[in-house]
Image 1 (cartoon, rainbow, N blue to C red):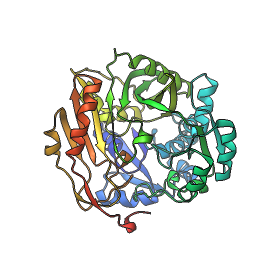
Image 2: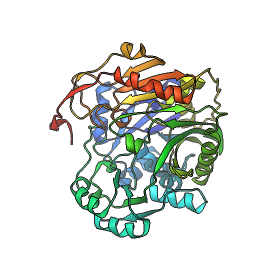
Image 3: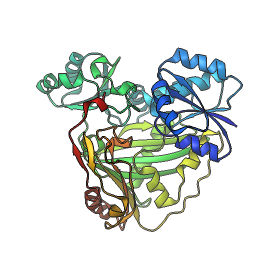
Image 4: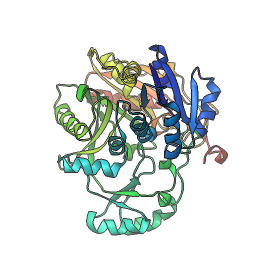
Amino acid sequence: MTVLVLSNQTDTLERALNHAGHDVLVCLTEANAALRAAIDPPYQVVTVDRWTAYDQIADLARTLRGHVDQVATTWEGAIVAAGLLRDLLDLPGQRTGDAVAATDKAVMKARLADAGVPVARHRIVTTIDDIAVAARDLGWPLVVKPLAGFGSTNTHVVYTLSDLDSMRPVLDKPVAASAFFATEPAFTPLTEQRGILVEQYVDIHREYHVDACWTGGEPVYQIPGRYNVPPLAGMGGALGSVLLPADGPEAGPVVRLAEHAARTLGIRDGFTHTEIYLDYAGRHIVGEVAARPGGGGIQRSLHHAYGLDIATLLAHSAAGQPIKADLRPRPGVYGWVGPYVPDGTITTIGAPEAIERQPGVIEATVKAKTGGVGGMTGTGLWAGAAGYAFLRGSTVEHVLQLMPRAVEAFAIRVTPTRPELLR
């Protein structure tokens, strides 16, 4: 089988497909194709200027008709492009309409709200001045973000009208990004976005994620977790999560809500990563549903806790094969944490062996390197993490208590940012 993969900074899916015996054709943006060439990839690469260059994507479809059997991506910025290619090539999988609902946060929230899924009230605006107009209905504080983004990139909390005025210079600047991310629309200034999503602020007590795998419209598994701190509040610090025991009191409500949301968005095959807030009034609210596996250290935590090999499952799904996951629960409670590398040049970073000597740590990875750069996209890991420590404890709270010692062992030191390495 020949699979066209729309890719970005890593080739995990491509390698898994090759390992499974499939032929792989990779599409990259021009900027990332130059970066991928450095690893001398064992597959053909084709390019487009950007994932929203739909005329080029249509041309690509005409060229590839009859030569590819499946289209796949795990890169959120390319999900709509993948849907369009499937439409044009009449291939199975998520089509354009559902791909838009999985990436455009306003479309997503409208669908969910219409189906009775609790989401934050929201408006679409086109200028910064319109944010103040939206506040008359939604009230202060507000959350503003790109319509199509990922993670918490370019997401801001605005508390008052005067706060909005003081933030204008920030909203008018691009988000600093490494070469892998610099062409992604979410990093352009909010003032240059074609639309800005304005949401009612949710006072989050706890934030959960539910990672699910789907075949034929039914979940193969649904595994919940709780973040150590809500990611929006924790950006620039140490972020992680703990997988929740399936029979625990927190698991059931978030799993049921995540399933309702995914079904509403038309998910039939592949993966979903649903983020759910618990506010201080005790209400569960869906933040968003991503049509991909969870990032950060979630995938490796699933391996430690259940023996899951997400890369292999991704390859099966990308090739259009039904997924069968053999969950083998292991004793204990599992989680992960990754400390942020501040903007600057890295002068010191701890070794994995030092981190693995900390209580509860069962594995550590360090992606940051001396001489490399920090910042939100410097290491290539989610939220600019230096690497990940994977932990096992007796309870959810126990794992959370183990995280600070692991973070400290990363021993991150940087010197001031070198502007030429950032956009």
